[in-house]
Image (cartoon, rainbow, N blue to C red; front, top):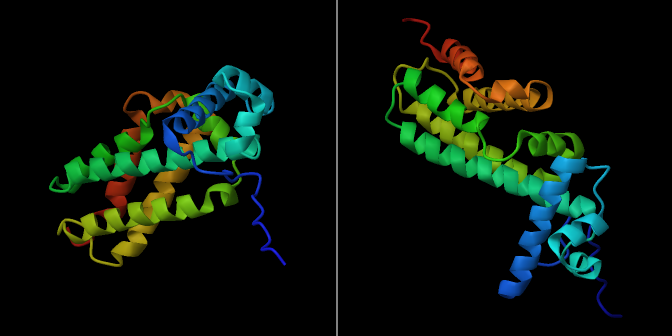
Length: 210
């Protein structure tokens, strides 16, 4: 009996691009999906629209993605990776900074992720967490380890379980920024949200014997 082919879920990519032409097709599809989500939202975006805007046939789209969900999930994974890269750079820059200078540096980076806030909102609304579970857990693990390492290296931080504190900080900040993307996109510009999160984290981490 021939081996059974592994079924591809609707949110997974069908195959990886091979060669410059295939890579260009995938990038055009991703860019078209991003544009259409911003302009028409998830419901108003179809694979036919995506293929047309990308300048390829629907058949070419289905060579790489099994559905619209697959394209949107790929956008979500890329967003997570971009956030992780920016966070790592910001944390490396702030590694020798005192807490009062490091926190706003990192928080500001996470708030001001590149890309249209309307796209971030669509991704938050329309991507079930299981679609990007593997990528999300990897990114969150990297972020948490980076925060914990910083906390262990700075005496001005209160003693305690720094892994737990990194977990609390990461998920608290992430939840607040996601809420701003969803409800108050005006907070993503300017320093008001950065200042409030800096104050929140600073109070949480300050030494109790100071």
